[in-house]
Image 1 (cartoon, rainbow, N blue to C red):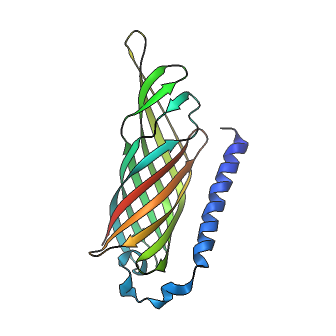
Image 2 (image 1 turned 120 degrees about the vertical axis):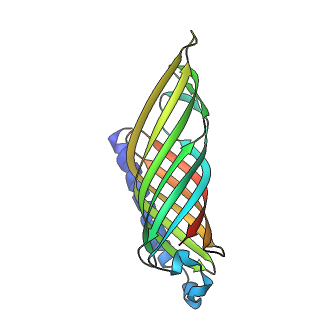
Image 3 (image 1 turned 60 degrees about the vertical axis):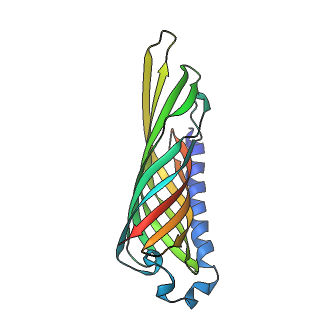
Length: 205
């Protein structure tokens, strides 16, 4: 990806994150009317950890070697820690199933993606049981591709990259220290841009 496009992508992601924080900060002060018991541990409790599982779908934006590429299903886990009422840290890891790809040079094949990230998170309760979430940090992804040549030999290729990443989401607190979240996540790097939609179930302790 050209440097000017990369810089524009990073600037766009940072702008989106700042806009999200601004929007939630000027949201109605309705959350102040609720006591701590109206939310689960996710938002109102400090100094807690959480673990979770997630599933979703992944899209690769800029695989210039592919003339056609399917969107694979994505599965993974997440671990985080609340440093204060609004801020925390989070790491995640996910893998995809094998999906179809048609290369301009190698023909038809399969590919899968492994991705990981580390983020600073921001939470803001905006209604009873509901909270907004944004995150910004660094993430990486590795893509493994397998093709069958015309003489029935396997050709395997692999490449990876690390870049700036972030996400926006909405969560809802459930009983028994459980919460469910829906997120849109983006990764922007020199050679690899990905977008993913996921749903996560988390347990706080």
